[in-house]
Image (cartoon, rainbow, N blue to C red; front, side, top):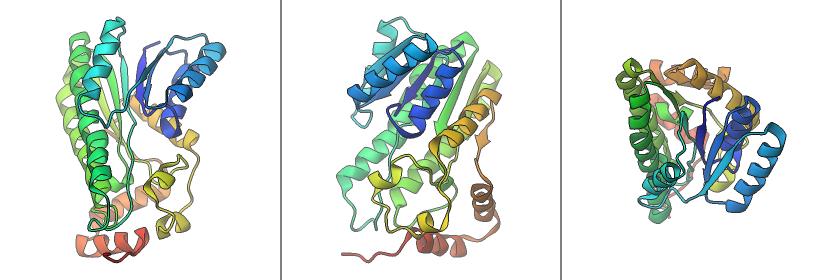
Length: 261
């Protein structure tokens, strides 16, 4: 069974991706900031599934962290067959009010680290004429998002970047899948301080495991994009069919109102 490298593997979707891959008998390289959580997960998965688990403690929002992860993996003579770029976070609030340092970290993690890791590992995949990449985007990829302007923009980057690579890499036996979950029980809402969002009050929020199963299955099938859930698919279609003069203020309403401080 191939080896999967998963970022943001200590919680949320990343944790579930790790459990799913391990249950299929695959070895793992787990990347996250929390060494204690990764060590606990390693002990659990190796005992339960008799697989090899390597942990890499790294904050991918730091410049050059992706290169350091790649160098560490290569130094251990490990081959990455599947790359799951899951790490990411958001922030809630009007752009005039939000903290730039946090947003800069968000852009570094959600876009730069994702693209850099892909750049580094995809060359090995192309040489092997085999590989799978799963990039975690969002339903936020499909339209601008007032009160989460930077986050929505980062996920649009993931979507367009992944779709372009799908075309570039398909002839070499490498698939690239962008996965677009909506709100999910992962701790994302707490990190983004989204407790006032109407969207979370109106929509059902599924557990991380069934969502992760759909993303993993889409990666295994080599799909270009995958959107789990009927409501999320309706939102995606609406963003295509309706004009932005309607979509943008509607998104603002669903996200929740706020005034410039």
